[in-house]
Image 1 (cartoon, helix red, strand yellow):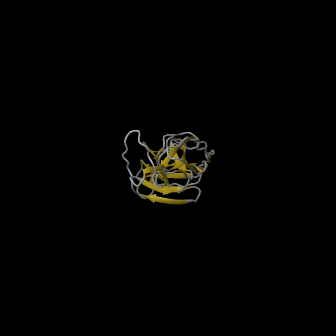
Image 2: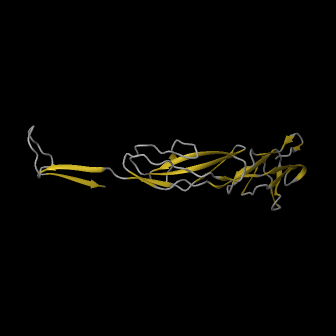
Image 3: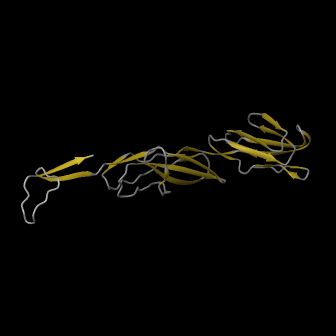
Length: 219
């Protein structure tokens, strides 16, 4: 929460949303004064900047209190006013797991992918995004946003799938992907029919075909 602070007729403000994703870095900017003092109340360190804008980047824990003091003069001199800002961490400690690898026939339908519920560290709004990849590196949206997902039928290419957990807290969106699973699509059968030693026989209508062999190759 922010406490109001003013320097003369200028308002000292902190940048929007002191909510950070767990393990991330948040840049904070203040303005409205000539010089500033920044203090992290937990670590009791300070930083003074004589410019009109100060940015400070750090990783915070939930409940950290930040103290910003603005001065009317350079180098922390003159009249001052202080603003306190609390930090809330939007964390996803466990994105959940999704059901195991599969092997299906060419043009087949995979089994439904079921996912366990994720674990959030704050009271954030929870949504999902399923993603797919043919190479296991570059993922694109698969078009589903539910806890479980039914991949499309008539699959002809092996595909990796993963579920991204999305936690939104006071407008701050944090994401964490599950471990991917792999659906392997077996190559189609290649059936070749030969008559004698001729690969493409030509016969008259009503004639009998002798010496027919069927070769089935699995790739």
